[in-house]
Length: 144
Image (cartoon, rainbow, N blue to C red):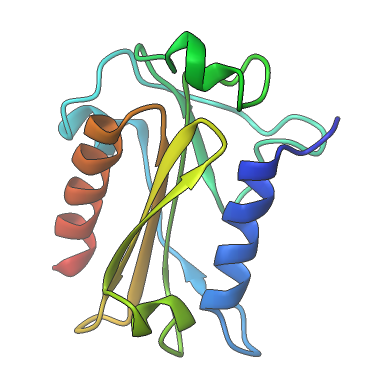
């Protein structure tokens, strides 16, 4: 199946966060999203060339608006992608900000760097509210 632009961008972000050695991915579960206040969370299993680790994928109750869905992939309107890892070097995007918002297709992506732990957290979700809630919960979890 064809990979969408936002998945490709998400994966390229992960690649830039790592140096020559692979980052140590951290576990993200459906419970983490539910703890963040996200409704209807269901983990998505890997499928052929889609939804592969180390990114964790989830379906949620919230969907993209009809307008935003036009700029996104079909059947992905309620998809959340989340990734967290311990990295050996500071990601290049941190030069701008330790937290960065990027529009990806019809979604919003939040990238956060936890300097004290040398960890990145990247979340792509259907809405700004969802991406902020999930990111805040994951940054809190992985800051400990």
